[in-house]
Image (cartoon, rainbow, N blue to C red; front, side, top):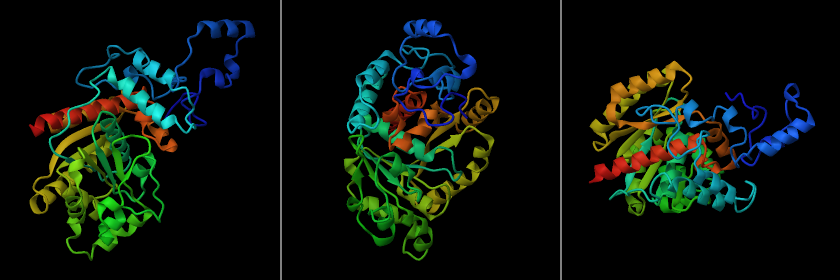
Length: 385
């Protein structure tokens, strides 16, 4: 939990330390305060009091890939942001309520990341269909789906996010309407509606599309029981849809191993497993792997556990480091070098209908997800060849 000044309400990206009331016990005389204000550099947009929160810096949250140790990455200031990030954020001189903020922040994200890696990452020679699944809730499935998709799209890839979670959180984070009257993935699975009738572009990021979920999907588990080929209905829908126009299809799953998740496993070529760096997250992992083995044996022999992503990493605890070490020892090279730190910005972004990549491109969470997406893109390009 954050111990910083944003505990009572979400910190807005445009806030600065001067916008908040100072604590009574730390009040200073007006003369000293005025002098300090003149000497103190202005906080960049999106990072007000950042060092005092658990979104933190790259050093204290473990953003740096665990294989390379801690320390501030080259070319970035001690607050985890590069000069390009600060310049891009200064250029976006509009509030987050502005009608043009989406375009400004998307451009800011591209500028921020361009100095760290080439703008366009390698694109696969065929569409990669990746399911993001873990039956434990709260491990970062939806957050990872949305932010990896946003990072890939901002670097030139064409991405489709299929929201298979009845809660519809991925649709929310991408700014997609998903009330009951909206055509959704439920209609595809139950009513045999073509995918092209439900896929809509994300309003905030070019090249990013979404097949939204509605609450109707909550009853799909029961309705699928009586359907023919109930485990492969999503696969058939994707096969009949022109997914070749996309570079990536990311399928966000509900926190269960029911028919919706099985449909996602049958419909995908790769499986990405987000693992929270806590003990409970490891307990159900064996059951998920057994389910994957059954799907491979009977329904989808092409399914491959290609990626494991460590999320919610807290470098202040020994437990997080121990879990990360155990996962790497067991699964080896499929574990990404990048770990995702606990970040207030990652939690705030969906409340504004955005991914953290556009909400605050210089935050530790955005930088970490960008690195993770880059690893996925480069690994996939090598594997495709």
